Amino acid sequence: MERSDFHVELANGETLSESGGPVQPDSSGYYIATTLNEPFDTVVARVVQTLSSEGFGVLTDIDVQATLKAKIGADMPRYRILGACNPRFAREALALEDKLGVLLPCNVIVRETADGRVEVASVDPVAAMGRIGNSALQSLAHDVRARLMRVMAALEVRARAADGP
Image 1: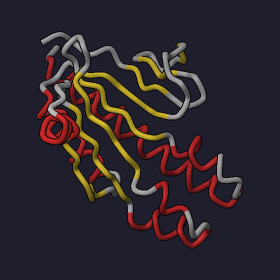
Image 2: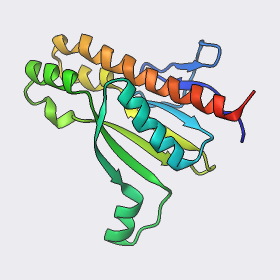
Image 3: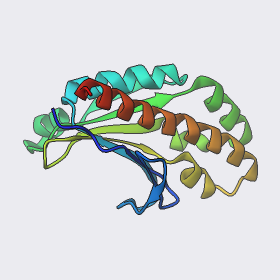
């Protein structure tokens, strides 16, 4: 299997590369993402496991491909939306902003790309919380972002380890 290039896209317009340095991404600024050369089902399982290691549980798992096929007969590549929640952070955020539930849980997508790779992307909580205008949420948003960034980085490391030396 081909090696994955290490890159994690940041909402501020930077990408962390294998060397740790910033490069320009194709990101629109509202998500954090990485793309892997791993089987789709393997990636989904690793995402769930890695989210768990950062304190997130998956509350929902929407199979968009199956749903669109069943409801309107539309064909599309594999696409899952995982609703991830860290209960401690959710409670803290809701205590600071009672309408914040409209942004919860943190959606993490796993989707098959046109070239057969698998992209994993999550909302960037710093970008999302910045629109609310409650400065008390910023520290919490940065902490959640750091955890989601570690999830993306861990997925890359595991994919590279699976590819071998």
